[in-house]
Amino acid sequence: MKVMVFVVDNLLNKDLSEVYVRWNRMYLMSRFERFTESDLENFQIAINEWADLFITLFWDCSSGMKMPKLHSWIYHIVDAIRDFGAINGYTTETYESLHKTYVKIPYRLSNKKDVEMQIMKNIRRRAMILRNQVKETKTPRALTYTAKLFIINFSNITELCNQQKNNPNINETMRKGFKEFQNCLYEYLSELKKSFTEGSLIKIFGSVTLKNGAILRATNKFHGRPWFSNIAVAMNNEELSKYQSDKGIYFGAINGYTTETYESLHKTYVKIPYRLSNKKDVEMQIMKNIRRRAMILRNQVKETKTPRALTYTAKLFIINFSNITELCNQQKNNPNINETMRKGFKEFQNCLYEYLSELKKSFTEGSLIKIFGSVTLKNGAILRATNKFHGRPWFSNIAVAMNNEELSKYQSDKGICYAQTLLITEVNVPNESPFHLVLVQWYDYRFDQNLDLYDCPLLKLVEWYNFIEIEAIEDIVHMVPRFDETNEYFVNKYLF
Image 1 (cartoon, rainbow, N blue to C red):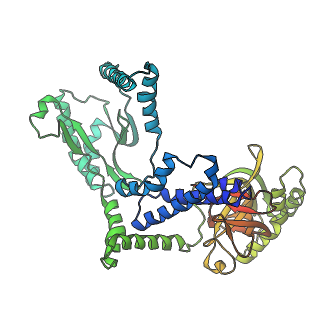
Image 2: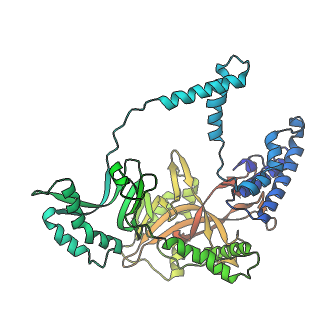
Image 3: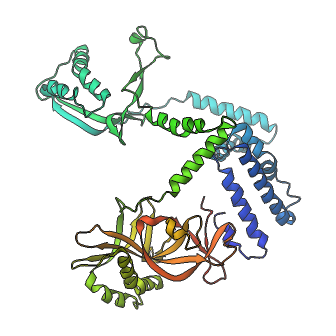
């Protein structure tokens, strides 16, 4: 469904592409995690629009389109969402697997007479066998300790506890632990009638993986926050009479994970929007407030910063600035590289001078230019501009966020313009931070009007090249060449 819209474009019947467009529109709505009444009304409209065209196109292929799934989808899915919640995440795999085990196989084992009774007997026998099977006792997995905090000789335990119980740089819960550590350890050892000898070591860790695979944490900092796990402890028979318990389980704290995160979110996304509402149809007003907040945050123009951890790979060239003309002349006529890369080297020098002149920068002695085949962006996507990746050229297409000054100059897709990557470049100038740049060739809309086709921008490559900063790249996009047309491309918006 993600590419079928483009596969059947202009094939036999224009309605064939339209039915896929309507399906994708409807399917994207079906993936909502929450539905308001207006969402459900719009969803039903989308279903009806798709179904009407689908039935018209394929009526002759089926006897009256009498399909239970089609009927259920058109007439019952919206009511099911009202009664049971969103359908996003449902899977039929569980039921298909159970159907095979508890229906198909028992049916094949029957003699096809009084089938239901034979299936029920088979299932009962299976259940009795499974219940009475004696499983082998497995040795529990070894405990896996991680994040070592301290390792000390037993003779230094008093010194460590005195230091840490008043340490202002650790969490209050951990200070409490060090305050009680020594007395509790002595008490535990005395119950076991054990004592420390010379050379005994004590190790304190931030986390341990239990035999059931759960991770127990007692750390001052985990992703920037303290985390002290709460645990359920199975009491033995002697202890059960001493304490109130939950069916033999007693709860203790390695002192609870903080609720500050959730309280902060509740304040931002519930309390404040509620106060801003007029107390009528509150839930709808809160959702609109949150959407506006998200749009403002997404569209804020941030200062361009050098990404912290750009990971360049597949180094292709490294040259001094003085050799740039020689490199470009060699590569722009190199028959062993792809046409797209030759185009990049043809425009490289002029575009680089133009970029630097806008910044009022100039190259000095010792400036280095590095050209790479790929770089990992801050969102984890890999940008490629390489002559050969698994035997094929790969020049990524990208979405570029335009700033406010540029938005009025160009036609854009809600503030986004599109380009093809030609060369990935890092420029190192002495006494300056490196410039992380990409040479791109821009796409423009194919027509001045009717900018979109099948709800996707229809574009063409234009002879316009320049360098942009990697930080300006919003994401990598999927371009689909239009069949039987020259220099026409769809931006695939159906990558769900």
